[in-house]
Structures are given as C-alpha cells and as structure tokens.
Amino acid sequence: DQQVKQNSPSLSVQEGRISILNCDYTNSMFDYFLWYKKYPAEGPTFLISISSIKDKNEDGRFTVFLNKSAKHLSLHIVPSQPGDSAVYFCAATTYSGGGADGLTFGKGTHLIIQP
Amino acid sequence: GAVVSQHPSWVICKSGTSVKIECRSLDFQATTMFWYRQFPKQSLMLMATSNEGSKATYEQGVEKDKFLINHASLTLSTLTVTSAHPEDSSFYICSARSGTGYNSPLHFGNGTRLTVT
Image: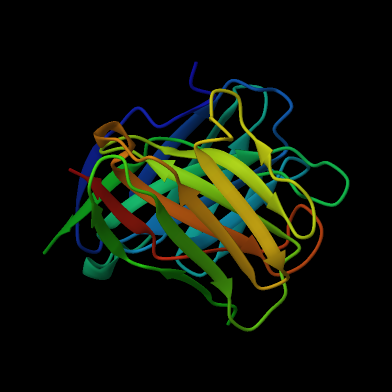
C-alpha cells in the first residue's frame, strides 16, 4: 500500500512554461512534506518543503501548494529551465519528538524540459 | 553546505559474499542516519534508522540479520549486506539530518549501486 503517490511517471514541459508536479498521500498522520530533485547516479537533493499548518510555500521559482482536505500537494516550477530536467520525488513524514522519522517517498516524476 | 559521503558508489560482488557500504557526514554530526533502497522505477524505501550508540530500528519486512547496520560514531554509519544474493542488487542510499527537529534538513549521499552476480 503506497502512502505517497506520484501518478505521473513523466512530464514534458516547454522551456519557459510552468511545470506542475502532483503528489497524493493517504496517511492522515503525515504533517510535513518535502520535494527532492534527483539526477541520474546522484542522491536526492532537497528542493522545498511545507508544513501542514501552511497551504503554500514559495522559494524563488519553486512553489509548493498543500491541500490537506484532499491530501494533495503540488510543486510548481516557473519558469521552467533546462536544468530542471530531473526526477522529482515527493516525500512525507510525521512529526515525532526529536524528528527522527525517516521519509516516505513517492515513485518520482521524471520532468523533461524541452527547448 | 552539509555533505554526506557514501562509499563505494558502485560495487559488484559474487553471490554469498558480504558487502559493506559506508555513510559519512563530513561537516556535521548526525545522531540519526537513515538507509534507503531503491529498485528501478520505484520509490526510495526506508530500510532502517541508524542511531549512534544503539541498535538500528528496522522497517517491517527488512531482515536485520541480513542488513547489518553499525552507527559507531556521530559521523559514520555502515550497512553490511551479508551473504548477498542477486535479489539484493539495488541502489542503496543513506541520509543524515544536520540538526534536530522534524524540519531539520535531511542530506543524502550519492548512493551505492550494488550488483550481485
């Protein structure tokens, strides 16, 4: 039973346009969400996060939206650039004491930015 | 920024042998490190949480006797795949937090590609 779902294995977007990556989760205990970017043969790198007490977090070209009632979050990248081509993982965790929980990841979405 | 170094980046071993993977936090101390495994086109799956100075906590379905974890210092955790079999071939990634609290950054190593022949 996958608790974090990224239903689009791949997404192709033209350079300069907006990229929207979606993520759904089933575990209502999750209260902190993160997006990671991963290039081939490298480990994931942190991109942006959002706490369940917020519905939006923005950092430069990246904005994450959280809809708790729908258990859905999305990552918006605008404008999309060629260097954004990578696999994007959605991850979630629950707060517990010292924050020692690992993350539950989705399967990832391969974003391809076309020139 | 905080760096997590993982070694080796790839390894090929024969069935029945053991392989050790190291995960080091280079410029910060990590009381907790995490080990993940990724099959092709699948998500990263948490295998175990490594706690400095105590036993690792394994996720359900992960054999603790097969995947030995040792977190002997605040900067080093090791994962040993014992008596490896071809089905253990996978991409293993470690991560470590550079602070405390659930929103402290989680830094990942570059992963180890294990191929068991």
